[in-house]
Image: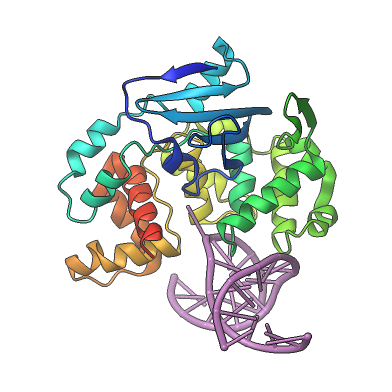
Length: 288
DNA sequence: ATCGAACCTCCAAT
DNA sequence: AATTGGAGGTTCG
């Protein structure tokens, strides 16, 4: 157990359960029913976190420097939300969301897991995406046993590539099986290096991602935003499409084809496009 | 170039 | 109890 951060506002609940990452689950602490545990698997490690007043606490495993560094990076604790809030606190369509979900961060996930997760997201809802990512891990990830039992790390590209399209169909991926299999082959062979994409600018990284089967503009922008540190990304899914048309686009009184929404929003929100996206998205989904 | 339909599977709502 | 429709998209014709 240990305090990961203090002072800075961090909203663990909204961050971990807002559809960015798919291996987090909530439960109640067996010792203190009031306390909400957030359990997830990152980097092959099962982690349990709780939110206390102005801090994020590590419950398991025993905190050490490596783990704190891992979480500090994953939770993107260094993101300057104040700059975003300051610029958009008075924005007609963002002010409420900023108040309600203050402390919601954009995560910095592993690009590989993020890529596969969002390929699986096509035509699926969040519970199903979670279920598929879990099945993939159980199917071909590495079993790890800790004090709490056995869990499965997300597979490496080689593990997933070896698993193959047919096995992926077998665990329920449907038409996405082919995409995941091909993507795995591309990453495993080194044809595309995801880590390398961090060094490229937004457009160059986007162009690379679009070469991967099953990856279109939306999925690519999710990977860019949630794992490759491109905070000016703007994934347009059905919810964002909806909310943008109901608000800014309507207000502007313009006709905008779907495939132009992303660029238009990026111009509007600039370096905070990703954060604007997440706050608009989350608020719109919660109030549906 | 643009625009629907098709694609797998699960599950909630008829 | 069987059937239909839709879910955070991409691809193909």
